[in-house]
Image: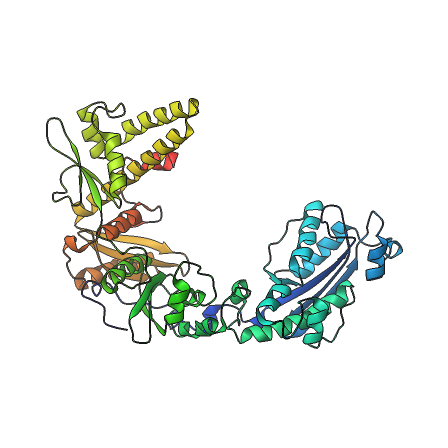
Length: 532
C-alpha cells in the first residue's frame, strides 16, 4: 500500500485478532461441503395455503454428498382429495385414513429439519404450505435459511441446455438417479441430485461457503464473482480497505469490523449502490489498513477519503463544511451562523453539516419567539439548558396535533430533535476542549476485547485493544508516551461530529484515575432519551 499521508500516520497501526495470529480462510464461515441441507417436497390437495391441505411430506438430509437421513409421512386430511390430484400423485382418500395429524407431522418434520438449510424446488410453494401449517398448529416457524433450486438454476442453466427449469427437466440434465413422479420423497431425492449439480456449477462462480448462498442467485457476472479472490489474505479484523485500479489509483475507501468479509460482499451483488458495480469492474487489488479500534477505523476512513479523493466515494467528500450558531455578547444578543467559531469560549451550538438546517434552528430561536421569551432563557439555552425550550415546543406540537395540523407538528418535532442533538454535540465538544486529553474506552462484542482511544484537543492520536480491564492502565501509559501532540485545527468538522457522537453513545466510558466512568451527560441528553 502507498504510505499514508502525514494526517493519517499518527494513529496506532497495531492490530491482531484475539488469538494473536493472522486470520485464516476459516473466517469465511462454513464450507458448503460441511453444510447440512434438508431437501423437502410436499404433495397437497391444491395450490392455496388457506383452503388446501398437505397430504404428504418427503425430505432428505444431506451433507457433502452423503445422505444422512430421510423423512416421509402422509398427513391426515379432513376433506376429499380432488380427482385430478389423485390421478397426478396416486394419493387417494383411503391412503390418508389413520395417518398422523397435521400437528404431529409438522412436529416430526421440524425435528428432522433442525438447523439445516432448507431446500426446495420452487421453494415459495413448499415453504408457504409449511409456514401455514405451523400457524394452524401453533408451532413457531424456525426461520431456517431457504434455498430455491429454481432460482439457483436460472443463473447457471441457459436455454441452450434446457427449455425450462422444471424439476423433471433439470433431473434429466443432471442425470438424477431418481425420476420425479409427483410423490414427495421421490421428488425430494431427485431434487438432491439437482442441488448437487447446481452447486458444482456455482462453485466456479465463487459460491463455496454457506454465507455465499444468500447472494448465489443474484445476477452477478462470473468475472465479478471470480474477483472475490481479491479478499484472500486480507485481515479478518477491523480497519479500512482501499480498492485500487491496475495502476494503483485509489477507487474507493471503506471500513469494516471484518475487512475480509466486507470486501468479499462487493463481488456477490449485495452492494447495490450507484457506481459500485463499475468500481468493482475496474478494481485490480485491495489494500487493507488494520486498525486497533472501530473509532480509529472510522476516523482513518475519513482522513483517507479526504487525502486520496477516491472517485467512487460519494459521502464525506466535504468534511470541513460545518456551521455553528453563535450567540453574541450584546445586551440584546444576536444569533449568527458561522462557518467557524474562533473563540469556543463563547456560547455556541453545533456543528451542523447543513447551512439550511442551521438557519432553520436560528429562526426557531430568534429572541422574542414564544419558546425563548427572554435573554436569560436564550443564554441558558446556548449554555446547554434545553429544558425550557423543549417544554414550550412540545406544547406547541400538541396544539398543532389537536388542530389536526400534523405536518406542522412533525416539522416542529424534527427541529426539536435537531436542536437537542446539536446541543448534545456542543456539550461533548466543550468537554474535550476542557480536558485537553481524554481516554475513551469501549467493549468490543465480537472478540471480547476492550478498545482504548486517546484523544487530545479534539483530535484522535492513538489507539489499542486489550483483553482485560486491568490492562487498560498500562496501554494508556504507552499511548500517552508515544502519541504525537496534535493541532486541534486539523480535525475536520466531520471528525468532530464523530467524536461527539462516540462520547454520547451508551457503551462509551472514560478512563480516569484508574477507573472507568461514564461521560458526564448533557442537559439535553435526558430529553433525547425521553422523547426520541
